[in-house]
View 1 (tube, rainbow, N blue to C red):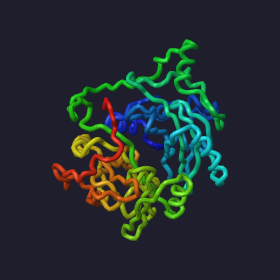
View 2 (cartoon, rainbow, N blue to C red):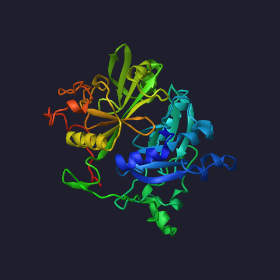
View 3 (cartoon, one colour):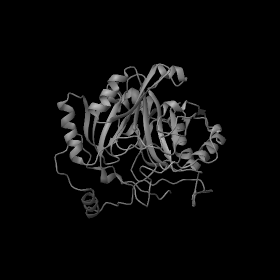
View 4 (cartoon, helix red, strand yellow):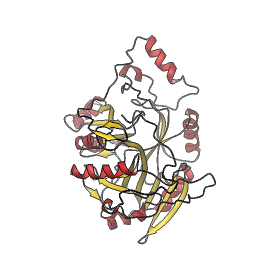
Amino acid sequence: MNCYNIEEAYNFYTRLLGFKLSDELPFAKILPPEKKHIAEGPGGTGYFLRYGSDHHSLVIFPKRVRDQMGGSAATPAGITTNQITWQVGSLQEVVDGHTWFKENKQEIIRAGRDMPGSNWHVYLFDSDWHVNELYYGIEQVGWSGQSKPGPMRERGFHVVPELPQKSEQQEVDDAIAAGIDISAGHRSIDAYDETFVVDGVYLQRPFRVTGIGPVRLFTPDVAAMVAYYRDVMGMTVTEEIDYRGHRAVFLRVNAEHHSMAVYDIGLREVLGLREDTTLMSFGMKVASYRQLRDAVDWLKAKGIEFVELPGELFPGIAYAAHIKDPDGHLIQLYFGMEQVGWAGERSAGRAAAITSDPATWPETIEDSGTLFDGEVFMGPWS
């Protein structure tokens, strides 16, 4: 996401939600001399954040700087998503995807390999000019918590790579042979104590983000956006609803009920949400219903603003809470999602549409047999 209040956003996502800093990007160091001034001083740095071992799962960049950079960095009015990123299973898919997108007359922004993060990618626009990234092979941050050092980033690419490429293991071996200190990368150090016992583990807060979830976008043309994410990106429509005369469509990439949802933009005013962004919300998953309840209580005590939204807008998710980041972006906290079976059928224990007001939630809930279906974060939690 591109954020006006970048330093406040950094504190929000790290100190409150528990993301760790993998690397930072001072834009003044990468801009040409005539533009360096726009990124100098406070608020000129972008942050690569992670909840697990992927180098980054969330990136926040300074919107003021990005807009003044021009080109593809300056997103169209009303778009505050820097990019929406989708993982594929191989480098071959990225290269072939690039070819396929071009053959299908999709506008390619760029392709190659980014640093930091080491992920091979292709970037393109959706029908509303949101940037999408298809990628493979992101850098993994291991038990030491250190990202790759700067000298290991010389294999960045700005063109579609020729295949085959050397393996990650060979890149590491080559760096060691060249005398590079592979332990010299950035390591996040948290300056607060682990005081909460969370399911048998001491943590710094009473919950743990264990996954990133659905991206929800407002759009003036639901049909065009559905066509893009279904026909170009290859998603499957799971469900469609009408809420007070406004259309919403939910699309999935695997067994989860949805990874992407698009809503008629007229609903934004109905719900009283931020008027200058098409991002309705971005999902963050915690490990259990108990952790979700504890997260709500803890964040309320920290003075975080909650927004109540009708549960009908989130089929497949039974319990969710919505909080505002310092820019007014909504973060959807949830703990589980309905899974779609091998035959493309909805689960028997379908999540019911309920109010998102946590004050109405029961102390405990009964397992319908599907609460723990789907991908599980294998840990460790800290």
